[in-house]
Length: 298
Image (cartoon, rainbow, N blue to C red; front, side, top):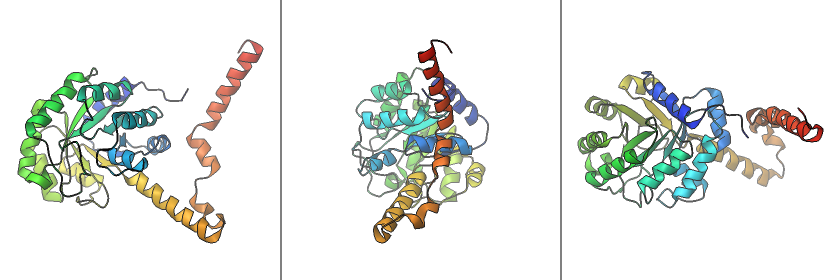
């Protein structure tokens, strides 16, 4: 039992309403459920689950090695602990777009994005990517749209074509993806103001911007992206990068010094952790259940 009040359909309605607000939605990535709770507490608009982060967290590179079961299970565990809508990266759709959409919708996700790379994909900010044809991607999008049951479940089409075919060809693809039923477009690896502004000028509908660190895109503020006309900004790997750097530094310090006394101030306290996981609420619930079972009444 968990203290989340909103059902999946309400989270999807919330995402639809937020998109209509004309304010850009700020969406950090969560690499685990606890991070999702923190994202909600701080006040962000939604939670993002990166396919690359899921692969990395399992110890794999982001080259299409994860399965539908891997990503959907982790997405369910993350989305169920937050009242925020959850957006998930489904890479190339796995083996069956129909099964993929049915699974993620059943698991309470609010939106997914599908990319136009070959199955043996690469990170969107690396070179030497290979694309499927526009026609093949259109079929995937249509399969996704026809598979969903909730009209508020969003299908996002990501295009990695800029680095392969150029910006104009990518825009042509995205127009076709919109015609196929994609409600949000994710133009990957745009570089500068000119790229972002041209895509906005040429495309109708909602646009998602990716502000991943160490990639090809200039890192704009959310206000700048809002002024460009973008509707969502994701920070997909940020929390994992922050966590792993801190963990690595801490482990090396303990290894070198033989103790953790000099890094205690870098740790989340027990008190703060218990606040985040609603320890006292669960404790009170346990007491109610225990009293009911032993006394026979509440």
